[in-house]
Length: 189
Image 1 (spheres, rainbow, N blue to C red):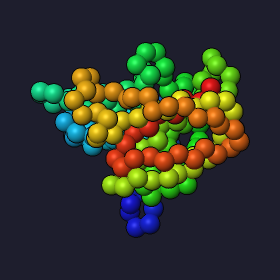
Image 2: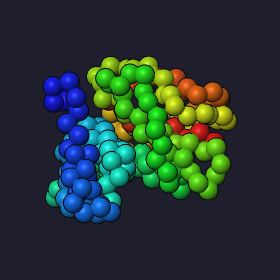
Image 3: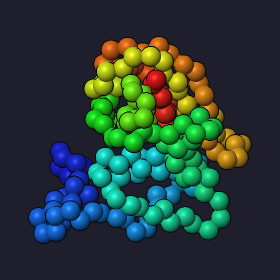
């Protein structure tokens, strides 16, 4: 935060580009966020990907360190293959909000190939369990939840989301309890 407002580096940069070179896109040539061997790396990578999507970053190149970095790679799995197979984040980013924005960020998508399908990635950055309502989209059907926590990922190779069950959804709000330091993918169909 800068004062009481987000820093918004990517947004400010894109506005400057748009004023001089309309149509040019942002690419991040190398990035890494650390946390290679713990859940912090998963949280950081998932958050990076969500931010890149919401800020319309054209391309970003993950620059891994030498050695192992399975927790950082797990951040990608929150969006791609989160069910252990071919389930992926949708192809169209949409606006959704968390009722607990201080601790929980939510990224949302729709799937143009499957009417009514919505996928959320909810990240609890807090050291305690958080209850949050995800608002902003009309939902109906069944939500399948896949989650990564420090406990659920311990000893996994590769580190990946695990199914934690399903729940019926309807209306424009979905309330979930998210464990401390966790990444939860919610696939509504």
